[in-house]
Length: 70
Image (tube, rainbow, N blue to C red; front, side):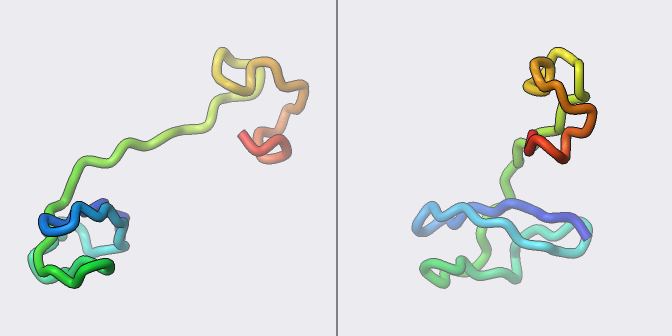
């Protein structure tokens, strides 16, 4: 199941929810104000760089990105 991001039309709160594929938000409530049917929004995501590459791990001497937290 994917994690979708939603925005409440009432208070503007943004939250994530693990939902079935294709969830629209019609049956959900905002966890802050309780308003029904928040809208699903596009989420940005970040990937980890490869050690020794041009990303944030480029200056790292570790060969394992898990060891340095990037």
